[in-house]
Amino acid sequence: MKIGVVGNGSMGRRRIAHSQMYGYTDITGWDIRADRRKDVGGRFGIRTAPSQEAFEGSSFDALFICVPPAEHYYYMKLAVNKGWNFMVENPVWHSTKGLDALQKEVGKKNLVANVSCNVRFLKATQRIKELVRENAIGPILSGIAEVGEYLPDWHPYEPYIDYYPSKKEMGGGLDAICDLDWLVDIFGDIQKMNCVYGKKSSLEINTYDIIDFILEFKSGPQIVLHTDMLQTPYGRATKLISENGVIVWDYKAAIVKYYDRRSGKWTEFDESGEKVDFENDITTTWAEQMYVDDSFHFFKCLKGEAKPLNTIESNSRLLKQLLEAIDYA
Image (cartoon, rainbow, N blue to C red; front, top):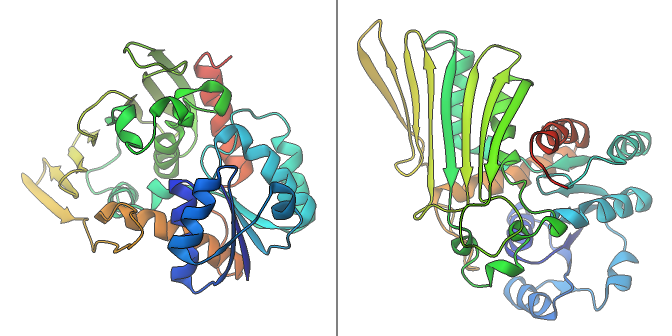
């Protein structure tokens, strides 16, 4: 299996590490930054292409696309033209133009085209999905979810103004789709999406640092999702509400618990699991496992042992709703 990884920043380094963990050794990296190429070559002992032309002229069985969202379409189209299977980070692009046609080409060539959905692989979101499907506290009617982190803390080793979330032209400002994705995975399609959004801070960005969503799902629940690029420290929490109780996710404590009014009891689950031990300066927290499982699912798809959970089609459908809900021009 020959693996190509375009974009050798934090996500590219993860995908290289995961490929080696899975047993793949024929890996080629490419990044327009020479320092990143040198870095991954030294850290992982992989080859790096000397130029973009050389990288694109290579032969791969699978390509990881880890560049800013605005560049995703170019590399997805390249992969399809070359007959390479690929995994692209979420969102699939910062526009939906041409994605339907691209999905059809993927189908014609029988390629695996997988969109990352790492938050779905957290033990906590999987537990929540299980509790909802099992009707542990009855039908979920409402809920509140939040996620936030101060943008300069995302990548403290580089200026935040060089990082894609700060710039619409790089496809930034759409990271909320990762949390929309896991909610859709549990509750199904969104019937109505309303937003209040704005740029409130002193950050030098042209994207929004606060987006508040009110989501009405076709299956019934009405859920508020708050996202921001302001919080210190990182914050994430979820509460799902029924007539019989609540399901609560405490991210920092890595705990999911639910209260059942009928029994008057709390039931608690420790979702921390084991820490992933990387030796390449990638964050070593219990949450890191979701990225590993995300990559490994793609590898299983390549072997015919699984199907993509998040496709160009499904991601572009959600992206269309997001782009219509906020002013992204």
